[in-house]
Length: 608
Image (cartoon, rainbow, N blue to C red):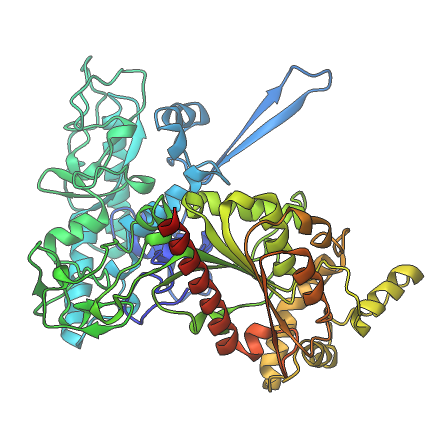
């Protein structure tokens, strides 16, 4: 993810950090633990061992096991929920889940679980509660103001909804009173009396109405109570327990109660402090700019966040498409290829179509030299580099193609033909993708691609063949396990070998060693690109380092002869790692090729 220091959106594609940084359960639970600590809901947290007083969220998960009786030998289906209301038996918890729209149920590994995490990060931004996560607080006074604000809302506004059957508010009230007594004893202070002090007896009412939709709540159906609203004065259908501003269901039932309304954390904070449309942080105790449409900015953020060029004009009047940095659907939906902000400094025509780069190694060097108004999406090969993997997925070349196709569809990049580029194994995948999904691509760039039958072979390819024939366990040059082997790999891949500090070499090695067994499995079909060349119809560009010692540059001739619309560029004094050794030149060639293709399409339209 590339972004300015203060922006929460990626400079490259406009997506928010929610989509770029997957995070983990431990990080999310620490986030919630910081929020709930010091509030009446601190019983939902626990101390972090050795954490110096830090607390983490005791998130309640639920595992449901159902027998499958249709077979001769009984088996079981297991469903794991990443979150479930605390303090319920499984029957009532499942009733609660059934009342939530199916697509929003936080079942592990589903879109509902992903949506839960997005809500956690958008409804409860960490920079609304922790000054250390803010980039825009300008003084100690502002830091103190934010800390005081957080302390007050924890004591007076913040709460977590509780689930029970209608009429059981008295039991919840009594439990809350007991917690207050315990907290008062632990801290040497008398318990406070708030909305929970409404009696402890079972309600004798026979009809209940939802405080959200005003509809009836069946007595046998679970409902959500909010301590701040009073256990006998209000209850909600599970689907109605939502923010009164944005209408989203409240993540993990965390609410802010003010003016007799439910708020998510984001919109409660915005009701007290304005929020900067540039950095998404609260504007605490300082002057700010207000646009003609009512949006607010820190003065230093009233600029295009791509070029970071400030202007005296109203930011709302500049030439750009407005994207909420925390609304990923605006960027990753149907308009993904057009999702950019532009100011007058970079208001040149956007190159179309979008560019998807597949790489076996990070392509940041090449990416930095591409035009800023080019929409670029860079992905690692599934299962490689920093991506996760399982033991059941297909990581063959065809499997990689299928996974990339899933990704393209999920982010909406296939709404118009796009350009695909790949390097090394990524070039192999890109070529097979072009053969498998020809109508999706406007053109394709192959950088030193694997997967061909090369007229001339390198020592590396000969070494691999000898290993296969001898069936002996030998060291593979591209799979190092020692510092010396890593140095040999760099010498093999780079004609101009980078000079890396030894500590950096150790870090690279420590990241690769745990994956070596996976890399050694290899690819069953070493000629998958060669076998697919006759199916490639998109205009193609080939970029190859003349001194490539991994796959021989003679492969460029194979591609030029097999692909009728093929442009070949061979780089002098360059090895296999083109994006690392010659990033500027490779970017110039790629940009020129894309521009030529665009001009050709325009001419074809005029002639027609």
